[in-house]
Amino acid sequence: MDKLHYQIQDSVCTIHLDDGKVNAMNLVFFEELHAALDQAEKFRCRAVVIDGREGVFSAGLDLKYMPTLEPAERARFSQTFARAILRLYTLPIPSVAAIAGHAIAGGAILAFACDCRYALDGHYLIQLNEIKNRMALPNWMSLIASTVAAPATLTQLALHARAYRPREAFAAQLLTGLAGDGNELNELLQQCCRDFFEFDPASYATTKRWMRNGAAEQALSHLKDVQATLM
Picture 1 (cartoon, rainbow, N blue to C red):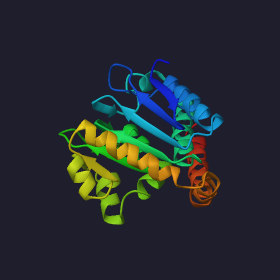
Picture 2: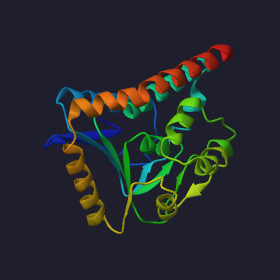
Picture 3: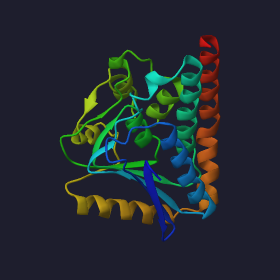
């Protein structure tokens, strides 16, 4: 795989984002993410862990790739993006993001789509910066952000494009936990997976489906309606 690598060990699927650069998202990225999640479901993993290189989790969509697309292609790509992240958001397997570097725009929403988020303390940023880039935040991204951010925080995060340092994100309860070093981060992730293992898989999957699938499908339908008016 070019954009990410995964391995399955002890019923945990670890998806490591590493394209040697900023883990930008394009069609290859989403194809590989789907392939990794396919394997996690096929082998009935009990947890999925998504991490990146130290210094960068993901900088979001590939801004060099986007301008090359015609309007219809861009609309299809937007749906591909939404479907991939919403799949993670509704995944019937518990998921956790391990953040040790910048998580910007699509990278931040990828982390927010996970059920838990642990971060390494540092000077990098976690931010939904779409508004600052003169882009509207689509319904489905707002939906995911609203599940991790309290109303006042959601305004700062999504509408005002506030950039959070990890310690600030933890104080705002955007993160489940904060680690002082790599060893502590690994310990937190291992404990999180052990906690996941305590859950009955069928009960977890059913409850998550009841909580999320309807809203996710509605948000995706809204995206289709908006794009239909632009094409």
